Length: 100
Image (cartoon, rainbow, N blue to C red; front, side, top):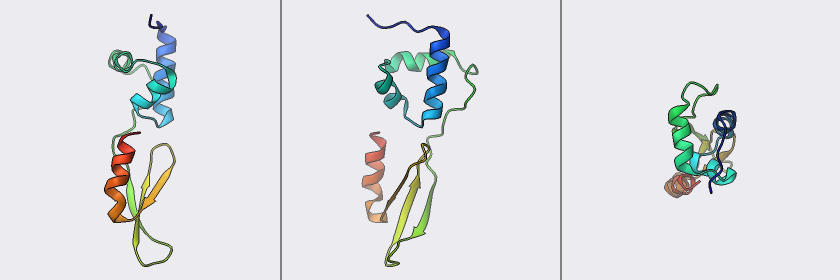
């Protein structure tokens, strides 16, 4: 039987998710919450959570690589981590990040 969450528990989870930098699916996996229930909470508790949802866009900027022979791409992720790679590796990195 699925656990029933009180209103305060749902709001705490929504707030924690928004501050976590995790995807909805990753947060649900980590906290053993069904994704369908989580989406229901989001839909029905708009405006009750203080933080705003993170955007789907990841800011990126170009920086010179240490050896100056190539240009690296650095992705600054919403959770504070950064990923650097060569432009030829960017597609593979983006695909890997989409699985997170």
